Structures are given as structure tokens and as C-alpha cells.
Length: 114
Length: 111
Image (spheres, each protein chain N blue to C red):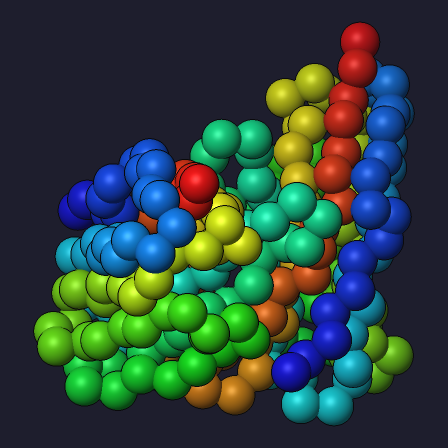
């Protein structure tokens, strides 16, 4: 199993550009989520999904869209990039059903918005 | 939104020292507590998951305890080594399988 994969690893955007961060998992996990990591703020939840066709907002959803057309993929779209979205983005997945299931993280995407 | 607090924010110890840090959370709406270890330039890796009051977990020199009635968990590291240097994250499972993370305790172990 590849686990949770993310592409790209690094990205530089100009203000106003749009892009999609890709996330995929091959563990048949129902639950997938996106976090952003900023200094001193830990991991903050952007959006999450409990299964194909179902998405919901986390703590900091503004400026981001998600979709979940398959169990495996959960892309994160930046509609019009802003410097405040400069961050490291982590995708994660876990099996639902019991609260003690481990959550697995992807390697992260480092995004800089100029 | 669950409020998960970790203390201290950072810690600097010498090799061989034992240390511990705290995760505090509201005792209601509790489902499970997770501890993660997060090394610089890597992604977080799960250490422990605990669900029951009084749970204790151990992995090598690292152990954790859980008190759901008073809303806290302790993570202990015995005989710290430089390779233990990392940020240790605590997270709570609430509704809809969401994990809410604390801001972490950054541990640095020097020779």
C-alpha cells in the first residue's frame, strides 16, 4: 500500500491564481480531511469528508473547495490564491466506525503564494 | 469546536532526562484521545490512541495516561534521547470522526 499520497510537494503561486492539491489513499478509508499547518497554530482542519459524495467544512474553510467523487481521492482547490494561504497542507485519512482508528497523514504540500 | 490545549509549548531537556507534557480537553463529548509524534519536514505519525478512563499505553520509553473525568492526558518520555526531538501532538476524536488537534509541545533533546 502507498498509504496517503499528495502532489505536488512544493508549489509557488501568484496572488489570484487557482490550483488543485491532489490527495489519494489506497486503504479504502471512508474519512478524509485536509489540514493546514502554520507556525504556532498546530494543525487546523480545512474540510473533511466521511465518504464519497459527502463533504463538510472544518475550522478554516474560506478560500478552499473540496469534492469527493471517489473513495480514493480528495482534491483541495484554491479558487483565488492569497498570501494568507501560504502554508503547509496535509491530507489525512482514517477508517470510520470506531473512534480509536488511527489517522494517517500524507507527506504534505508546501505552498507559497506571492 | 473542541478545545484541546497542550502544555508546555516547548521544552528543552538534556539527554537522559525524563520529561512529561500535558494535553487538556473538555471532559464531555469525549470519544478518543490520540497522541502523534511529528518530526520536522515529515508528517505526523500516530503513537497512541486511548479511549477509556485510566487507560495507559506504552511504546518503548514513551508512555501515556488518560483521565477522562478530569479531562487530561499525560505523555511521558523516560531517558530522553536526541532522536526523541519532535513536536508531540494531542488530538481528540469528536463527532463525525473529526480529529481536533492541540498546538503541540515541541521537544528538543540535546547531548
